[in-house]
Length: 501
Image (cartoon, rainbow, N blue to C red; front, side):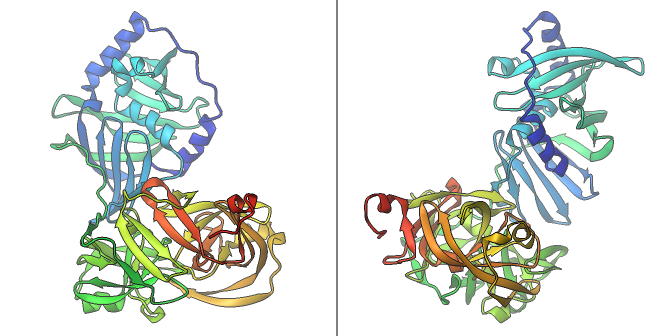
């Protein structure tokens, strides 16, 4: 489950006190046992559901215990979220999953409730808490009220119909967010499940079919590469960005490694050369500008000793002119350890479980793109790492509007990318601090549009000072400064009276 209101709910509930723990008694035990029996204990099964979401899009929902995979689809083109019982992930067209910001404790509680896992006798013995609240009467029916708090979760209220013992609602402690579950129907296998869910009196999910799945709920596979012949490196074709040769469908072309891309893309010219047929569904491209385009399934991709399986590619109409025909994004970085050695102009791919032994920098993910904490002068800023951007530091217009003291504009440049071109103001910032390194007098700019992710971009122009290891599997990157780079000061080496290697 992902929606804007629930993100606010997470923040809200984190500040609210937990209710007192009610001692387990025969009345509560009987209520839970009745609810477990009446529902058929859905948490014990893989439940597969088809329907539509609040926006009328086709919805596929697979649930098993506390885990779920939720896909919104247009024809066979699907994106969504996955929850493994502890952590929430965003998923893209190729079912690549990367951690989503926030939402983990809230998702845990919501899943505990809608799966009826709170009725399992092991819930409380495993650290979960249930507190009884005053029952309520409405329309001549009596409803039992509980507050449910899973271990590592947040608190939500639960409403059960005393006559049927079935779940009818869940809400936040202040009542601002109210889920209602209705249209309860039997499902083959002995379950009774709601076919309609509302949020704050508006439709949230409407299911047309719900059934017990034959197999267990699987983790989103993504694009897992195969490696052969040991570690291989390739030379970058350009100095400003990591463009390297790759082969797709026996055609060798220039490929851009772009951490700002949420999936995989190719040029219209290459799709035509490979005779690929577009899918019925369309995708929105968002770069400097935006436009709608097609998606096509392409053959396996071979790059730097790694071979990625056949995958869906967004077809871009305007990248061939920039000197590359494939954009390699989140799908590849999620399942490999990718090293971009800017000083040596070399790139390598290795298995994702290989060890990173460089200065670590923690990475968060927003919409499948990496975001890091950077200190610009005296300000703490969250910037998306964007290897597809040849600039050094590029602030979003709305962020720069609030912090104009960061730098004084000294020039303007015209930049191009997917979706068009725009004018940026440019200047210089006295210092940038990242992962224990301080870099003096760095180029900086501000773009003419608000931030979509973070407060701006940290591009290849800045990363050129380092060999960078992208280790998405462990939520970090490694940085090794360029030898002899006088603009870099290391906290560790400075305290020891040394310069960085």
